[in-house]
Length: 179
Image 1 (cartoon, one colour):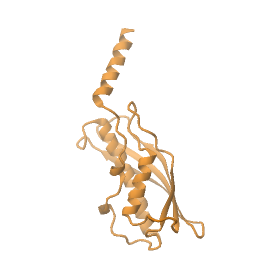
Image 2 (cartoon, rainbow, N blue to C red):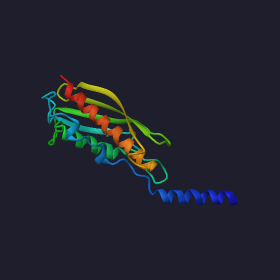
Image 3 (cartoon, one colour):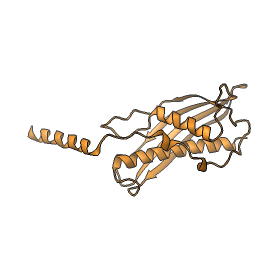
Image 4 (cartoon, rainbow, N blue to C red):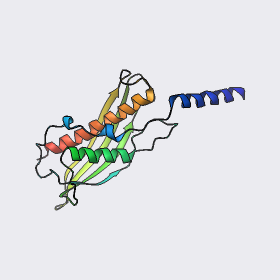
């Protein structure tokens, strides 16, 4: 009984010393203008994309768990990134509809360098013809090193944010290449 009590106290103190588990932050998942060249893609897409919905995958972070990419933050990062990329239509309806789904998020349990994986599916449909212009699953990785953050939970958060940002960047880059 005494060992169980001591173990519970150690777990409680460890949780208090490490603080709350951080969740992936929207601001860190948004692409930077430097991530993309100026718009040179399909002129039809410029300011004509409306996000219909962003689904699933994102779990809520709680203080006893590991960091997560919450669906709300991923959706906001996607919207702001599309706006930065000059693809988002600020006054719906647009000519094209985007459906996105955060399919899978993988993260390590521990490590000095932590690599997270984000898998998302994106479908772009031309509204007038109901034709799918784009339907792809994108899987991206990002590694956060001990040099970036000493705390393991912070490194994991950085890895998640980086993988999500790379995923969104790859999607937008693919849209730029559409003909």
